[in-house]
Image (cartoon, rainbow, N blue to C red; front, side, top):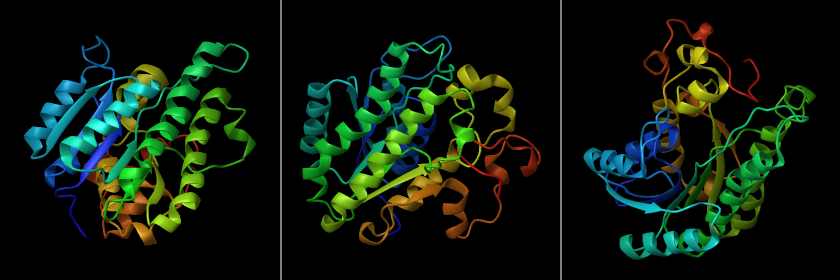
Length: 277
């Protein structure tokens, strides 16, 4: 299979950045995209809403279903999953995209921010996946794709000043590990995807550091990598922690210049939890 035409994807977040790029890429094939997000009004520093993303999906050739809701709200997520399955006749793909970031060191981070990251990143990924399983069992080539990193126990990722964030992102990755094992018998793939470099998103510009934007790649590299994963046979491609450019290299891509914002590959900034190649 090389297309997502007619497939239904339900994703958390997606009003901007990587999630929106993945949704648009799927829509170019003619996919149906249901998005659960809270953003109904634009933020001064964070352009994009669930409605502008839905419009972009439709302009790209797909069908969009914007579902206003909080990924932390059990009833809202259950209703969103039911609505997506009803409107499109099922669910083929779950994309766990929503994520909160706070790089405050341990002594200073508030437990409110800690809980927020755990609730959105880990619990949200678990909840959306859990509720979609009955529909995925009925789908051909069902996938769960979570945007989370490979797990490394190298102490540098725990002494870099963002322990709370590391715990939250690794918790998303543990969802992948567990679901891959639990759902393998059903032929449902569960994988994670992570960028090798920083990606030019609102999170990079407003949280990590605006100066990194010029040393980043565009969200389209993650969109193309996600597409390549989601068209692979689910029974043969599960339990993996994929890196975006490695996925595309497997697909025959040799030139990544179109994705970078700087002139040279060596000027790109590696993302968290990625080792130099």
